[in-house]
Length: 172
Image (cartoon, rainbow, N blue to C red; front, top):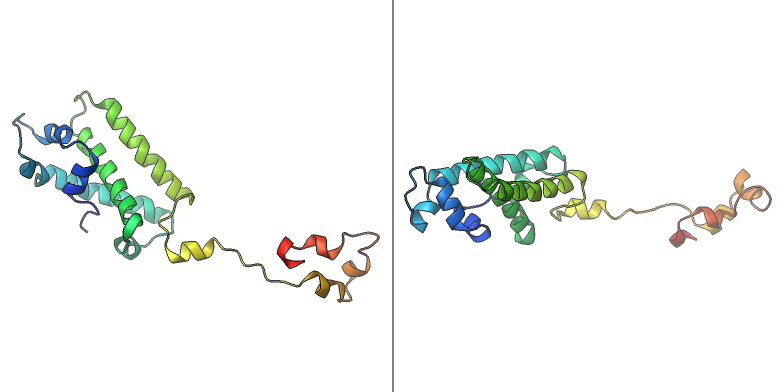
């Protein structure tokens, strides 16, 4: 499976000079083209795609086909998550690089986003998630309850609350 983000997406979201220094093993300065085509960046983006998929599929709300079919703002959010994980993996290559605070900030950012997706606080706006958020209440109206010959409707004035007060507001 290809990564959800490209090296150009990573360069648009994070300073290319920082990760350019982190991917160069011999300390040589790389050109922008060399940085974008570097195998470490490709591997980091692929690993990040795997992490992203595993976290989002663990929620039980997303299938692989749904993730690959995202468009618009939902796709931008998926690319952003993928880039954050990839950047954390690039920084992780050099643990003594002095960027520990930066790495922890990037990790905290994407960890919170993935936690919110796992908890259902964030969604990609797929139609089944939007439909699931609208609860349809089907049932009798208060007039229908009063016209039934039930024990609850007969005892309502003295012992039980009025049937109209036991229904949702729009069903009265």
